[in-house]
Image (cartoon, rainbow over all chains, first blue to last red; front, side, top):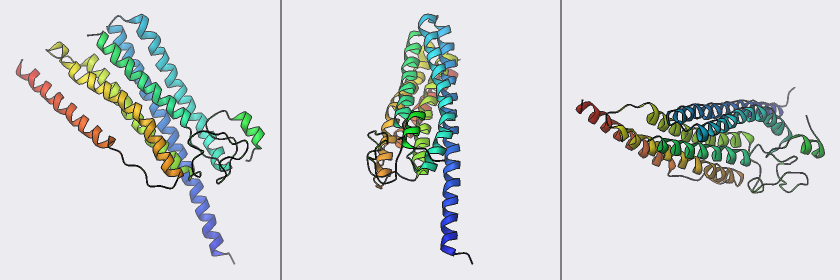
Length: 121
Length: 149
C-alpha cells in the first residue's frame, strides 16, 4: 500500500514545482512587457526629437533606449532558463543588480522625456 | 540537473549565487550580495512575485512617462502651452516612481528573507491621488477648450 504521508509530500512538492514554473513564466512575460514599454517610449522620444529638430541629441538617446529595450527583452528570455536551473538547484532567484539597472534606465528615460518636452516648447 | 560550484560559477554570470543551500548563506562559491546575505532563502515563488511587483511598478512609471510624452506630442489645444500642465507632471511622476521602485523591491525582499510582515507604503495612495489630480486638470482643460471655441 502507498504511504499517505509520502503521497501528500510528493503532491505538495509537485504543486510547488508547477507553481514555481508558472510564476517563472509570468515573470518572463512581465520583463517582456517592460521591454515593450521602453520601446514605445523610444518611439515617442523619436517623434519629439524630430518635432523639435533636436536630431543630434535626440536620436542617439533613442538608440540608447532601443538597445535598453532589446537587452531587457533578451534578459527576460535568459532568466527563464536560469530561474528553472536555480529553482532545481535550490538557489535563490533574486537579481538585485538587474532590477536596479532597469529602474535606472526608466529614470533616465523620464529625464530624457522631460528634457525633450521642455526643449520643444 | 546539478552543477558543481566551479562549473556553475563560470557559466552563469548574473546575480544569483553560484552555489547555495537554503540555510548557509556564506557557503564557499555562493556569490554574495547585500540582500541575499540577510536571513534565509524564501520560497522562489515569493521572490518571483516580488520581482513581478517591482516590474509592475516600473511599468507604471514607464506608462506615466509615455502618457506625458503622448500628451506633449499629440494633444492639440487652443492654448499652446496648456498641454504641458498635464505632460510635465506626468513625466516627473513617472521618473520619481521608478526611482522608488527598486527601494520597494529591496524592502520587500528583506522582509521575505527575515520572515517578517511585508512593509507598508504610502506609494499606492500617492499614485491614486496624483492620478485624480491629473484627471481633474484634464477635465478643466477640456472644459476651458470647449468654452473658448
